Length: 458
Image (cartoon, rainbow, N blue to C red; front, side):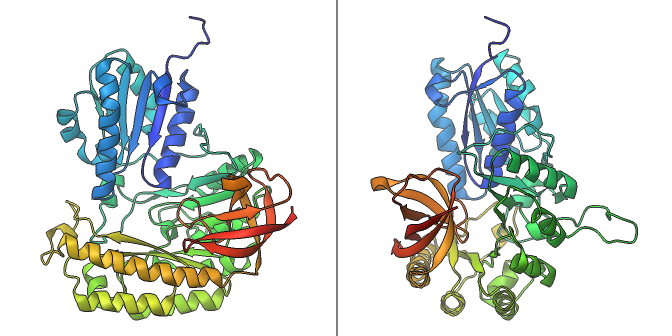
């Protein structure tokens, strides 16, 4: 073995949200600086790391299945080590260690920065490790090594970690700990580094993005703590970027300063992603959302007044304990009235450790499934109508790569990665991933995907 040969090759499987993917990228970058090599395929790896999600029941089931699929290879000796990281061990580490002897180490959200030494120990056979610090998550900064996944023209930046909200359905505060903001300068430096590396779109993520800055010290004497609008204004000046998208806004904290920068920004997109979860006052109270349907209605009107071309995205939960037929009808009426551009729907998942778990009047699973299906059908109809209203308009698109039948796959400013569909581009010329083009919308596919033809290459 030569001195520059890698210690081992590592295959990563990342599950769950973009915040998890970003954690995976930081772990990959950390390992690359500590003598490990990345394996593109599981079959060529010495070590497998599965970065798990534990947000809701279906995510846990997917994570457990992914672990079991790889555990067979570990038992057969095809892998030298198997490591499970992320939210699942952070939440259930001790139980998992008892149930999954095939796993060499369980790494909670507090120990991502230690992944190199953890793999060293696992490969050396130094016992089965449980690396979990309850109530704490490591928050990386611009100095952390990071290896981007994907094609490199789009990236996420985590601006904060943890959450101090008390939403009755959400287990995240118990998994990720108290809210902690990254320093403004650190976020700007990372954005500049990404832009210099060819990234054209950054998507800002956190559990509660609008709370960014609440735990930071004032920048100057006599000046208050930095707010999310200030961060966006700074990012709007970063040369090399084309799009800056802010995700996960808590609706009760969307203020005029934030809307102003979204409306006027050169790079900041008019994309307003604010999960509302329901529209029945009774359910909003039980969910501990701190608002009412009327306040939400006023917020939507305020957003549309301040940003006439805004893309509005939200999510709803059906089947929360105590949801009656009348509550659900209120939600359907609200959906028809407000007509958000992009909507996600979840069935309530009963999560131990949340206040919702202790509530009575559980909605039967079959009824929750029926409501999910009815709401999804309605939303598909409404979103398709909205999408068809774009036919004939000209918009800027970011090319992602090649698609079916010699079409290119791209996204508009109104299409966040992974959640809002894509745009299929027809062009006389070969398009490259990361390229910005002007296109004319010509059709709609499956309610959310669009078809377009290129009219100008930038």
